[in-house]
Length: 265
Image (tube, rainbow, N blue to C red):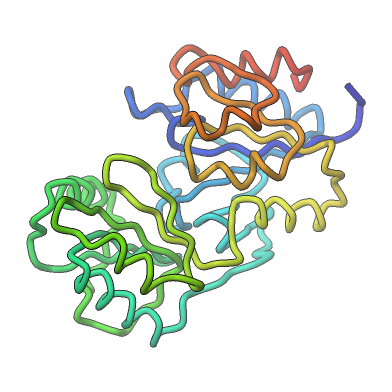
């Protein structure tokens, strides 16, 4: 391995952050700290929008963030890129979601927005409760049109019209199937890979010096883009063809293990 500066990009949920014990392992924090001391750049690259990364920011120190699947990229104190869905399009999206019998959350840089009514989908209510506990929910609901959002997530059930929903969003949004009736909807043209490209350009990093760490289907774009792809122990099979290193689960110190084996620390 060359001695040059590397840029490391980490997904949050299921990669840095354990969804079992709701924490970042100490071994992960230590490995990332060591990598930064060696001069490597460490970025979080997440589907979470900027308003949802607060809990992670408090747990781990990094050089920047690619948020909302590439819709906002921050390097140090500099916002390299930020995109929001136009207000009129946002109003249309709410109608499309409801017309096709889905429910979910509109995710923005400032906050997240749920319908004020109780959802018929327990998954939405669970997500709402979790975000409310962390203070991430806006007082505004879907009836108001006074805010912007960057992307959105929906839950569907047996009554949802997936075909009609997909057709209504075709050409404007990529719908990422996260499994279990959960779908992440990202404006076309933005992805975890486009976030990486912006960071590479900003710091003059070559593609062979980029390392990505992930576990789920919304990591696919960065796994297809990068040459060094670390796949967590528990993962979506869609990523396997692109993985160059298979590591352990988050809880089993998978990140630290991979970083040591790859000579990054």
